[in-house]
Length: 348
Picture 1: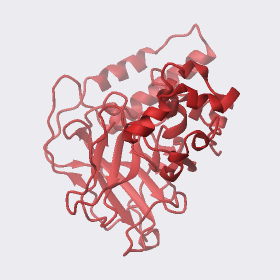
Picture 2: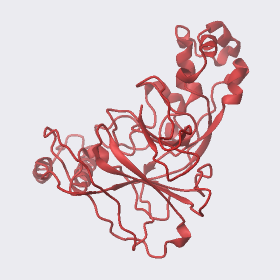
Picture 3: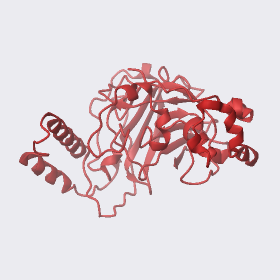
Picture 4: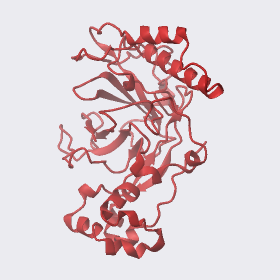
């Protein structure tokens, strides 16, 4: 299945021509629950990892607030399966029990938690992107790499998981690691991504309102400039037209590569490479949700016609089951000069 972003209600550059040279292409990834293989682009799926290459581990430190019980990845998967079975049972029999005695006993055991892990922690697969599926990805210029692999340590460092990036050539992987190690525990269940397949789609983005010049911000705040859009204009934004730009016309929500950086939790801050001072470029946005109430205009046409089921209790459009910093996104930026330089992690 493909996923198609609806056309924007009107061409914002026709109203504000100064935005036209600021356009960038982003690739919305549209993760949806599935059964990916190592040969697929995916979120939370198995990686095309060489059997003779050591699996990455995080050396820590790993601190614990000792308020929340830590669970193993298998605990989380078992808990999610139980919730899904319960939801399906209630659909078949609305008057039936929410949980069987066996399910309650299993959940009680799971929620008792695991011992706090000691030593290095095996990292978890977060995303695998093949250039054939996301052609705007920029592999290292000096290599034949065509696969980007993103892993993270499922513990806060200090406020979100710590990520690691790997580029490799798929053709050089003869034997794939069948059973990579998993961490004995993860800090939060929402740090384990649900396996998802991707249907990448290219869209056009414009900068965050917070990154525009003062002059352009003032123009976007002038409702009379917007009224030339005619009947396509949503008049509910008259009191704050800049929010119309932010919600519907600038930056796409959800998982994506490239495009513009999202802001909102903080004002824009410099993103420069710590090794060479070059301005870092947006690589990957790891999103908690694919959209929210403010960005429903970006909901793909296919999801409007046939919504994808979610587990009970999940936020709207939380297909990957991730939750970062209470509903925010983790944006990775990389140095365009050298892939060997440290990347930047930004929560917004």
